[in-house]
Image 1 (cartoon, helix red, strand yellow):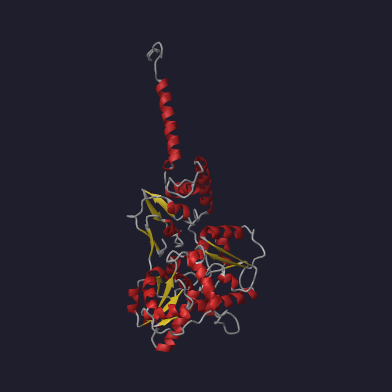
Image 2: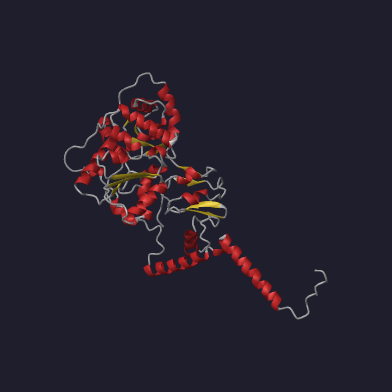
Length: 440
C-alpha cells in the first residue's frame, strides 16, 4: 500500500462521533465507526475543513516548530502574503519583515515576490498556448489534490507551474548559498503557512520530486511572538520588495486579476470549488481562459492556521495594497524558466476506483445501485457515512452490514416481528384462544 503523509491528524480520544466532519469532507474521506471518526489516507486532501468544523477540536494540523531553526546554520523565512492580513492597522510590510528577523531568521524572502514571477509566467504560458484551456491554477494544493482524486479528467487543465512558495524557496536558497558560501543542507527555508495543505505539499509534493522548503510554521503559532517583536522595533529597515500583484494573491481573485485578462473566474470555499469543477467537467463553462480556485473561503486569508477572521483579513489586505506599487518583480525575456515548471505531469489518483478490473468494477457498481435502492436516501449520516451512496459503497468494498443503517435495521425488525406473529398465529389450534369477555 502506498504511504501517505497528512498534516491533518485525528485525536480519537477527543472525538465523540458527532458526524459533523463527514458531511463537510469534499472527498468523503471520513467515516464514523464504533463511535469514532477515521480518516482514509488515500482520499484525504488536507483541506482542513474537518479542523474548521469539528466542535470538539479532535482534528488538528501538524506543522514545524520554531525549535527547528536551530538545526541549520542559516535560516530563511518565507512569509505568505496572507500573514499581512493578520495585523490591525498595518500600513507597512517592512514592520512584519523586520519582526521576522528579530525572531531569529537570518533572511526574509517574501512569497509575494515569487507570486509576481508566477503571474508573469502564467501570462506567458497562456499566450503561447502551453496549457489546455480553461487553465486551472495550481497554487492551492488542496484543490490540486481534489482534482486528482475526484476530477481526473481535468488533470491536464491544471497549470504545470510550481507554487509561489516553491519558487520563492528556490530563489531564496540559491541567493543564500551565493551570499554565505554554505552548502544547501546547512540552509533552512521555512514557509509561514495559513493552511495544512501547504504542509503536506512540502512533505509529499506533486509535480516535483522534492520540495525546496524545509518546514512549514503555522501563522497561528508565530503570530503572538511576531506581534511582540513588531511592537518593540527600534529601527525599521526597508526590506519589502513586492507590489499589488504579489500581495493580492492572499485573497480570492488576486491571482486571476494579475493575469490582466478579463476571461477568468475566481471561486473560493471548497463547496463552491467543487461546483465549478463539476461544471468544467460537464463543459458547461465556456469562453473562460483561466480558473482560480481556493479551498478556503476568502482565499488563503481564510486558512485554518490563520488567527484572524478571513474576511476581516481580506479587507486589511485590500487597504494595505493602496500603499504598494503595481509590481516589482519580473522575469527576464524569453520562455518561462524550466525551474519554475513542474517536473512531472499531474496524474489522477485511483482512490475512488472500485476495482482495477473493469468487469469487477461494473459488477460492484450494479450491486451498489441495488443496495442504494434499499436505503432511505436521507443522507443522514447515522450509519457513519456521509451519504447513502457512500454507505452502499462501504457495504460492497468494506463488508459493512446494511443493517448499520438504522432505517434498514428498523425495517428488518418490523419484518421479523410480522413474520414471528404470522408464524405464531399459524401454529395456534382452533379454540385455543380464550373467548372474549362480555363488554370487552
